[in-house]
Image 1: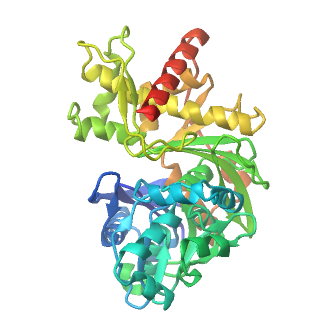
Image 2: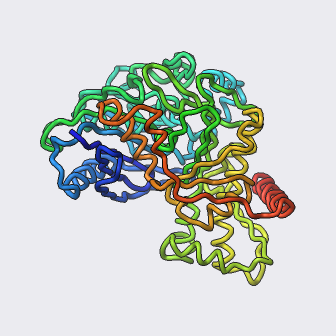
Image 3: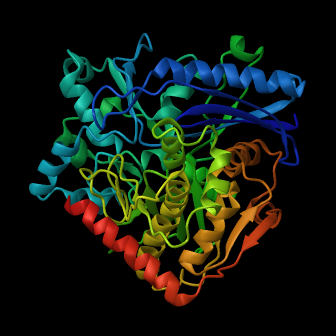
Length: 495
């Protein structure tokens, strides 16, 4: 058995990627699915869409590769994090749509808990902040707002899971209700130091602990697929939330190593080793990965809107038809204009954590057009990344200041965006040859567990650079641009 199948279940699409024994991509398949917006600030997915696209893309990737199912040693799963599902323990039927990580419907609940002084308890145990982003308050909302849900949960009839748990449940025919430590760490219900669910937090949110999945290592036995799905059972041996999987795929195994992934949102993780570092700048303390029962921790900064800002140019403003048009448009922008876009479409993430503000544009003139909007959209991602790195420098005793930033994700393919990123952070940006780092991380976790991929050191040595971007912007210009961004953010939050 020489292949590993990676499932990459994301916010707008599901992908399946088949890797060979050398961790090279053999085939891939992708399907988009519908997003549901039932109210302002609410975002949902149909759980059956998440499952059906997973099954379909897995079959398509295997068929495209022309390999036998018998050649696949293991499956690794990586998934959009924090997205919350509840389903019936016996039938597997969801009680409601999945509430997506971007959803802000629990803002009032979070505010009430903060006013009661509960955020200190949450941060101390979970490393997180009280924000609608995380799963805990989403789960509480489902129990309080779906008819009969609380009674069914208290009777033991309902189970909760993030997307990985939902997929494993369906892949195994309901045989296992499990998750891994990286996904558990994003629920706002898991004590990342003690390695167990927090009774205190669950009691406060009214969540029966019988609903919660068993937590395992990121590389572990997660059961086997139903024989009828792919023709024979395939072991599931790796699970990690998407940003943690990208950290693994970028081989950020040493303390001080830093990566940033540009997908729908942007997520920067700094490996802090065996010790969880408590942020003084409203970053998150989380688990980067857990192997052999031993967690490795990270500081994380989360930006809600990165690649999604380009989707907004396409679907909202309709000034582009394809994301590839953004780069040449931005290059034609008037350099004399300083249009600033703060893409707080679903609030601002780290280090601001303002759930209520919304997007804003500053500096418009009569001559502002698609070119200036495209430039402002791409630059907004660089500005937000600098916000995260400034906070990390402070929390990590400035050791991250000279660090090279490893990047991946769809937007990292844009030379324009990556050069501006290097310019505005004043540091080198390295883009790897393989941009499928999220799927690769999941594949390595599963393949290493299955015995067909090398250990950490050899895997890290195989990381290969495609291109480096060096800062070319003058310090004075960099400072002026970042100061303008900070003024724009401040005005956005005051509106």
